[in-house]
Image (cartoon, rainbow over all chains, first blue to last red; front, side):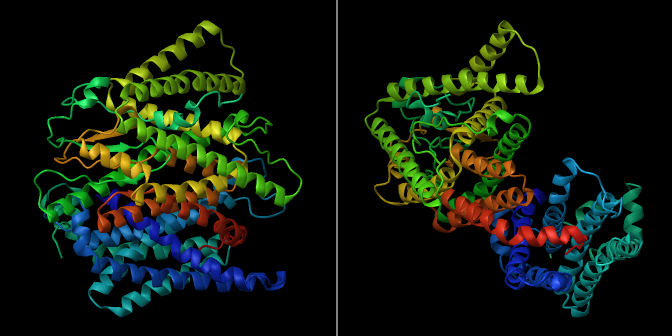
Length: 225
Length: 388
């Protein structure tokens, strides 16, 4: 089921990337000196666009829930908004990660030497870690975002947007990987905990789950909202 | 190699479709096509890949379901089919890309071209090249149109034996000759010494099992595997012998033709489907790839072309050649978009729909836009290791 939804939802994410590339290419005929500034502007814009689309997605999915019930293979159980949040976040993350890393992966197969011009030796490694962080973060952001929208907690929505911006801005510090990767992972961990709690998890649940004592836990997520 | 020594060349992609043998149906015998299966709708879901170089989604009308139930089932199984389509096409793409990357034969420039695209693209001026590619496209499309109409006429006048013979011949050629070529090139690439008797045994087994699977009975997954391999082989041949610009223009033209052929009342595909529905027969078996779905209680054949796979694969491997990864990904993703969008439209309109145009349009548009727009931006980001 998740796979099915994942397909539907993963497609949506590149729309923001494309729109913002469109915007950027218009403004991108500047000189090299302004390049970096323009790039930073582009990144910020892109982040904002992504979050806007996430919100739009949320609205769309809420509206279409009735129709989605038909499309899903369950006759009686509608897909819960939490599952939608998860899949949507995963889709976003997957697309974002894929677009970020696919070129790097392609080049990594080819002939070349890492850092031959004096750049960092750890380019590929750090890219890999960063991509993983981004994908997981998108997933957590998705869960928290949808939950916050459901409960009309706009401060939480704002927090998600700000943390996305923060993570992107942290990457401006590359190649000082300590400065960028470590805070990113701290944010990742915090977001993960937040997402866990907003999805209905708790320490008690976790313990029961890990010791395989509570079979109701598995059904808990299927409760329709 | 001139891969066009017969009409079967175009038809190969059509014959590249296999029919899964479902236990409850009698095995395909040419004459049994004339007897409808007792007028009852088949109790099993078939996802049929139409062997045309076109695709359309067709929900059939079952015997005794209310309209809303019917609609629900269509949606449900439509959704499943999208996913089920997705996997073979992905596999096909993987096979072709892997081949292109490793076996250089398929990307070597050659002056030989298919007989369907006689105009060369080796000219010096851009205008001339464009003209040639358009002319090539016209020829190719008219061949396809003629073939389709011919097929429909044959089907209408129940010349099943002829169709059957045609299909057997073309699948024979695909399974034996093309795979022999492919194997030869793979051996050359990896510098493996091989003797003729061994190759003969391998090819014989591969081809014979393929023929049996396609035209008679066979395990479902084996048939699907053959479909994927055969589509990949066809794609590779096209990649080698179809000039670049012609390929793009042909893609666009095919999607337009698909639109016309399926939607217009006199369109050949529509007529074919309607005739089959009238006669309550499964559409000609060797043309169809069907994959069984166990939990279904209603037959809703969704016809889809293997050349969809083929064309898409050409596109993606075309630019794989140029080693630009983002484009492949974008193309692939937008093809999926197109598929999902078509599904939604199917749900809305509930009649035969061409699935190809949307996917192809999406693929084309975003392929080129990625090239111009996304690529520079992404490269810049990657160079600085900025993440968005």
